[in-house]
Structure formats: structure tokens, C-alpha cells
Length: 141
Image (cartoon, rainbow, N blue to C red; front, side, top):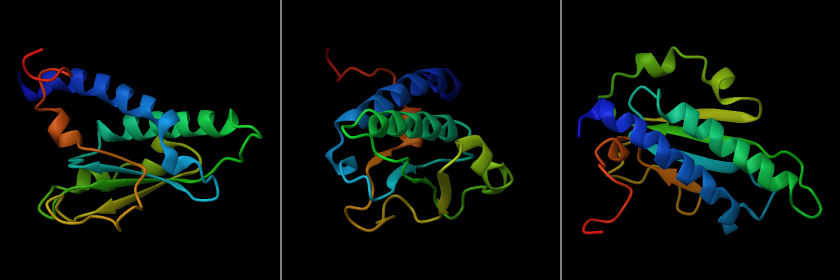
């Protein structure tokens, strides 16, 4: 399937990723910020809505805890290789797009290398890879 055709499919997978927030044990410690990572963000056009949705799910998870937890910061890391054309991403108002309490960071470390410290990310996905998937089902099903 073509890249543009799979953008719609990728958005479906983002909803699935955001839905995993409720079960993440790493988010049980509300004193730490939640950390999200996109490996292969390109211009961030598809990534920002996913980060925003994940942050919304984190807020709902914390508000529904017993006792309810205060709103924690969310760190959203946009990663791509150093040869990426960064200007479309860096000229956007990411802080406004992502919402209150979400802090955007950019990494130009290739995802073939360590991008963050081990154990520091709560949810990672690969925007780049999702565009090449033709189905959310395993092959042969």
C-alpha cells in the first residue's frame, strides 16, 4: 500500500497504542513524568495527534486512580535521524499542539542506536514503520 493510504491506517494503530496506557505498569509511579517516544517522526504531522491522544489517556488514567493522582508532566520525544529535514517539525508550535503539561523534545539519534536511557520510556512506537504496515493482523491470519 502507498504511504498516504497507510496514513489513515497508522491513525488506527495510534488509537490502539493510546489504549495501552491503562495497562502500563511503568505509569503506576505518578511522581515521575510519563515519557512517550516516536522512532521515525519525520515532520511530526502524524506523531503530534498520537502524543496528544496518549497524554489524554494518561490524564484519564491518573484521574481515575484511587486516590486520584495529580496531573503529571508528559515528555513527548520526536526522534528521527540527523539527515531528516527538521524545519517542518521545528517551526511548528508543538507546545500548543500537544497541550498543557506536555513537553516536546527532539532527538536526532538514529533509532538504530540507543535514543534514551534504558527504562526511561513508558510507551514507544515507530511512526515510520506504521506507514509501511498493510494490516494490524499478523501475517497469515
